[in-house]
Image (tube, rainbow, N blue to C red; front, side):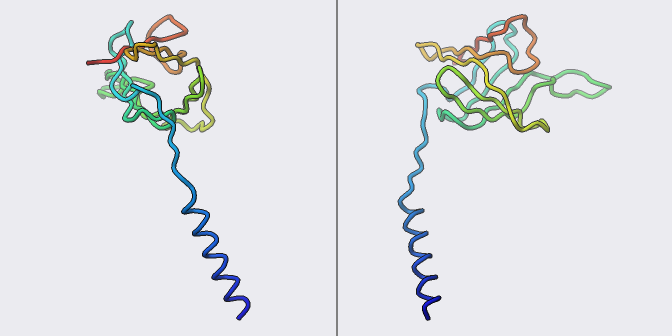
Amino acid sequence: MKTIILTINAIFLTLFIFSACENNKVTTSGLKGTWVEIDTKTDTIIFKTDDLAGKFYLNRGFEMTNGYYLPKIGSGMYSYDISGNSIKIVDLLSSTAGGNNYYFSIIHDNESFQVGMFTFLETNKAILTFKRLK
């Protein structure tokens, strides 16, 4: 009998703890949308939300490889976590799950952002600038 009472108390305590937890997503203003890299004008990043952590899709276009029309190297889904002037990016299609931190800054007008070179983008710059598509 004592075991049953302890089990019931443990269940109620667990339910109480989980019901008290809130899902506090932190967001940034204006991240959601499609952004194009200003030098190549072909590489695009698509954010589905304004959350400071989540996933984005990098579309680099397509190229002919071994007779097949395939996405360019670096295209695909990435996870990200923005903290201050840093963004941690993890390539979700890679076997390395650790990810790396890169410089990140949203320009004050929310129409562009800068990010450190994180994949095979065709530019000679260490910091890339992406501009919002309207």
